[in-house]
Image (cartoon, rainbow, N blue to C red; front, top):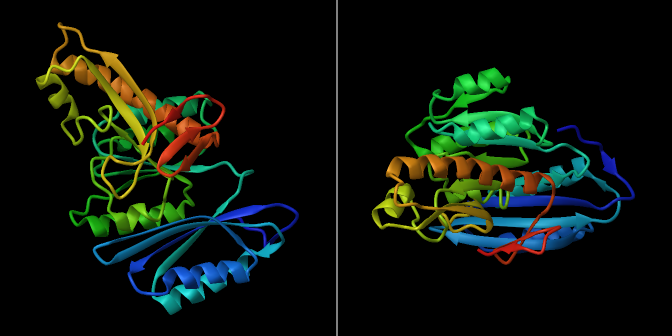
Amino acid sequence: MHVKHTIENQKIVIEVTVVGKDRKGIVADITNFIFRNKGNIEQINQNVVRGLFGMHLQASFQKQINRNELDDGLRRLSKKLQMEIKTHYQEPDRIKNVAILVSKEDQCLLTILGSKKKKEIDANIEVIIGTSDILKPIADDAGIPFYVVNNIDQSQAENQILQLIEQYNIDLIVLARYMRILTPNFVWRYPNRIINIHPSLLPAFPGAYAYVQAYERGAKIVGCTAHFVTEDLDQGPIICQESFKVSQSDTLETIKRKGQTLESMTLLEAMKLYLEGRLEVYWGRVYVMGTKETSHA
């Protein structure tokens, strides 16, 4: 990240994420630090799962700040609290950096890269991370770095992914049919910055076999859901949904093909909305700016 030492005469917003073993006094220490540096806390969320504490805080500063001093202060606080503290500066004038996580299916990845090639996406697709090298040729053709992270141990895999996300200064993570479940330890670091596509109209037919369930139970409408990822599997705030009618002549394979095409277009739409700065999340609900319609979580 190219950082100026000071920002003058403009509001700057930072996101602070805190992850570590739960203990008393964490929230007070972090919020007091922000107040002492003349910051205003705009949003704060926290959670504890099996002794793991996670907090996301958004703060704004109206006056000149020194990023180096702010970062140094948070590093000292991180050491004192024995917690991992990360800071992300929202820079409206900088083109956002995107990481795409994939497994074996290529439809969503191809649609995103095709849209980028046609200059429909105003973002830098900095890196593609896969669970195998099956989709590496697609990344190579697009000239995008591709990394394989296939550790069986999910915590080790996520540590590698986190290093890549930080290395490429990623603003948005897109799960383009990434078939591994991210843990709270990962998700809490990027609240409302990870978009997933799920092959059903949530909350119906959750899980990996949504199309099979829809076919076996004779569903007349099948769809997909693009949503932000939270620690609750497939329960994150919904960004957009699309569907198609199932005819009597449809088979499981035709439903899958139609669904995969719809998934790619829906994921792309959610990605564009995010990059255009049109998504706001309040109390688990997504509001799409510039339209009368909203999505319900």
